[in-house]
Image (cartoon, rainbow, N blue to C red; front, side):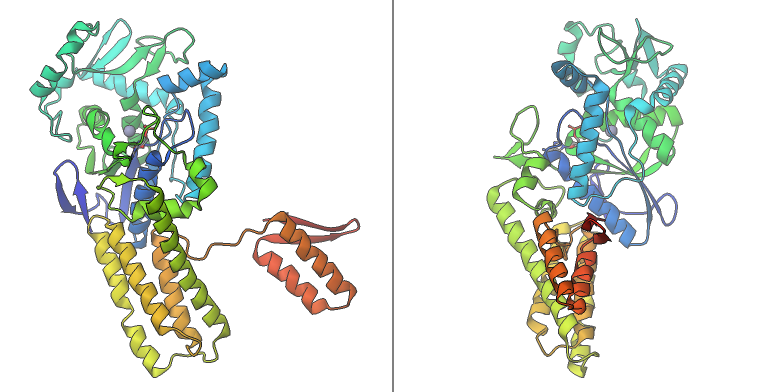
Length: 468
Ligand code: AMP
Ligand code: ZN
């Protein structure tokens, strides 16, 4: 398996720190609003990386944080006249609903910045003790120039950066020793959430949270650190500086970054106001369509959002689902159980598609080519399975499609959601069947509902039902 490492700018063979295990950290969203579909891109992409690693037999410890203390959260709380905690809790819950809708697996751990303040204070103190950080009037800064490797991820040269930041020297930030120094801890302003620390009542800078949470849940060294490409500098560069100076070890072996989701070729972002929330998209499309749309591009290529691409993703997904449904039908209605000789020969060729799928995914997670391999398999199934096919042959193909789709987090056989009205109608029909002593039909209806997660309770007041 080869991964493009932002740090070396090359595809490298993936060798985990510990055989069979992957430690992976993905920077999560700042929770002050519904997430937009730009934020959804890293969620979908790295969830797919995780799923593929698991398919390859790795045990993946996947950590993704929620940044629940931040200027934007505080601003939103003041706007609504509620606490910052109320805002962050609300949008974490909404974000988790969106993730479930996109079939993004919950992380092994989803730490919250506000629950990890003690760890942050410890790490900042260690950095001060080692001479990598200093306190000026309650603000603690990281002494960037002291870390010799600063710039190794973003390939930035310290002197160029310093020239570019000269303006900072005259903008009141001159309590810093150097314009490149960044904040680890800052004193509170009136009305802001704050925590006690040896330096001031205040709150942590943004970068320190990821260094601390990654260390706590994954250890001092991890295999993969990931996020959107806007995080390369300064966020990830600063995380490296903090973690490597504190722990004296290389922080992450591989750095992965997804390119932007654009709209009219500009980055979709809250500040530009050119965004769609995942929730808005879910009103128009099954979120599986959004997932398909994202995976149909390489994660390192910019992707332009458009209604046409969403429509074609919808059609493509439907084609795969139709094929799976046809195979299921054949499986249920086949006359022959076992494969004919001709089918056996065809079946021997099926592994080719899986091989193509794996080759694509092994090559830095080329999900677009992996989907193309699934399509070839679908085409093969459509042209080789008919009403004379055996159950075994249809099952083989259906299982294959379902499994490969599942690695991508795509659902080839969606569970049909029954509307309340449909359930009531079926219950009425069942009552009528019972009255007519057609118990076979009544049982059939009960089982049909059960399969869709609806349980019936016969009570004295009549039939009641509930969803699983
Ligand atoms: P934020 O809440 O802005 O910190 O973003 C959370 C994650 O979404 C980060 O990994 C960002 O890099 C990523 N992200 C934000 N906007 C986009 C976008 N338009 N395209 C791709 N990724 C994005
Ligand atoms: Zn981070």
